[in-house]
Length: 74
Image 1: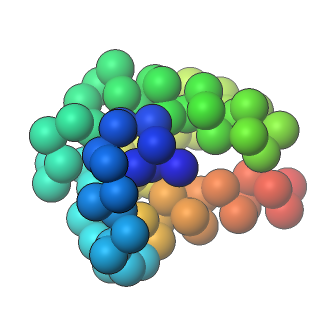
Image 2 (image 1 turned 180 degrees about the vertical axis):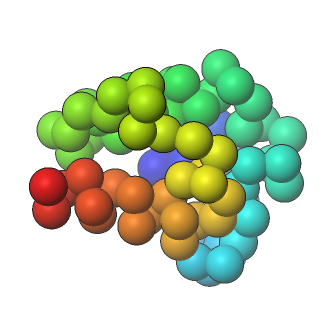
């Protein structure tokens, strides 16, 4: 999904859960974070409040995956 939203043309296929996101991918700027959150909300039928999200959720692929899983389990 990150690959799709950021138009990385398949670059994410080789990522692992430890792959860094925020600060490591130039395309993942503040506007892209907002777009990604919106896409996650739509695809997974979740709601993310402004105070629920911080940079740690976007630190790595694994951190973002865990954040979404926690939202789905809530």
